[in-house]
Length: 144
Image (cartoon, rainbow, N blue to C red):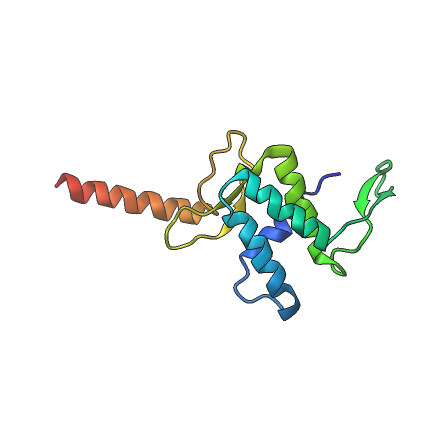
């Protein structure tokens, strides 16, 4: 079961400055996971959220694919379950270090590090470029 799309939805919710009122508490709960800092705390927070927002897997076959697992609830009906399960699956398969916050001090948005060497530090190429340009300008000023 590939739950990456659910985890990506969780990231979008964490980065949403003004989610619909029913999703604000969930956004804050998911943001705490990204801000936890260490793997044990990430796991503990996700375990609490998995109890609060349980999922029911079911077998499905569609689009010419054989039987595979899906979450039984429609993510639009129960977005919390999918978001929490998606993040838990990423942590279980790849580690908590795959959940990150943008290192650009002006940003801080959440992201999933899908790089092969776990080296992502910015939420987007825009933030990476902005930070690199700022560092370059600071070096130039220091060298003059």
